[in-house]
Structures are given as C-alpha cells and as structure tokens.
Amino acid sequence: MAEWIECKISDIGTVVGGATPSTKKIENYEGGNIAWITPKDLSTLSGRYIQCGERNITEIGLKSCSTQLLPKNTVLFSSRAPIGYVSIAANEVCTNQGFKSVIPNEATDPLFLFYLLKYNKNKIEAMGSGTTFKEVSGNTMKNIIVRVPSDKEVQKNIASILGTLDDKIEENERINNNLAA
Image 1 (tube, one colour):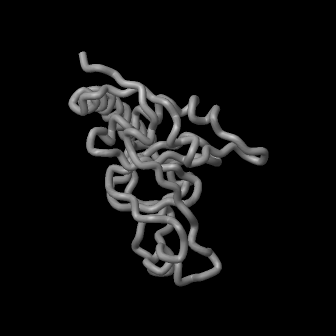
Image 2 (cartoon, rainbow, N blue to C red):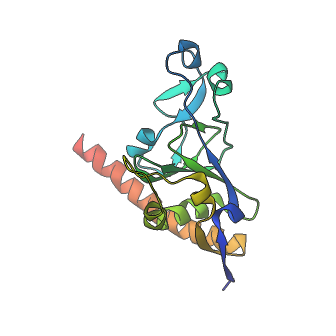
C-alpha cells in the first residue's frame, strides 16, 4: 500500500477563481464560443465531466474580466451558492466567481482530485464564511488539509474503482430515463 501524505490543496494543484464579464455589454456574450460555467450549470449535471454551460462568452468577454481559460481536466468546485458542486472540465472552460477550481499538478490524477473534493465537501463547506450566503475564499481553499496517496498510480487505481461504480450508476440512470420516456 502506498504512503498517504497530509498536504494542502495548493500542494496538489493550483486554485483558480473565476469572474463574470459585464452582462450589459452584448459583445461579451453574443456569438461567443468559449465555454463559461456557473454553479447553476453543475446543479443539473449528472455525470462527472462538463463541456459547456448555458452560456458562452466571447474573446472580448474573456479579456474584459479576471476569468481565465482553465485547461481540460481542471476540477471545478463551486465555492458559493451552493458550496460543493464538483465537476471535471472535459475541455477548456472558464467559470464565474462562484468557483474555486483546482488545476491538478503533474503528481495528481484529475479523477482522484474530483473524488477527493467530493469526499471533503462538508469539511470545505464548514470553512465557508459570510452573512448573506456562505462562501469559501481562494485562500481558505488553498489551505484545506487533505490526505492523498503519494503515488499517482495508486490515485488512478482508487479513482478507477470509484469511476467504475459511477459508470454503473450513470448507466442505470440512462436506462431509468429511457423507461420513463
């Protein structure tokens, strides 16, 4: 069995926030082809991966605010309204300010990171602050302590087992939806 180490989320990936281009400027959205994800987009997601949200933004919109293109396999984690939706970017995406996403480093398997964040959802949510609604700051997210196998192959094996179970659940949901139709 591989050694498990205690570390901060910032030790296993880069934590990145998002932003929203001004909705008053039509050129930020109209004709856009850059996937822009909000927590609402994850609220109805049944799988582990997301390709696009309800809206896209344009290159002008991307450059108009502090959102940035996140690479494929970035793990998206909603950090407010609500805290704890988790998904993996199937391609390049950007997010609004409702996320503290984690770009896994070379030693971290993205699917393992997805399950790690799902597992630690309640712990992360408990660290949120705010009066109107709870939010997890970037600094808080970076400093959350987690335990991970030091061997990436062990991470992949764990993620593979959990992924196989999720594959079966997703297939059963597809069958049930077909039967209900």
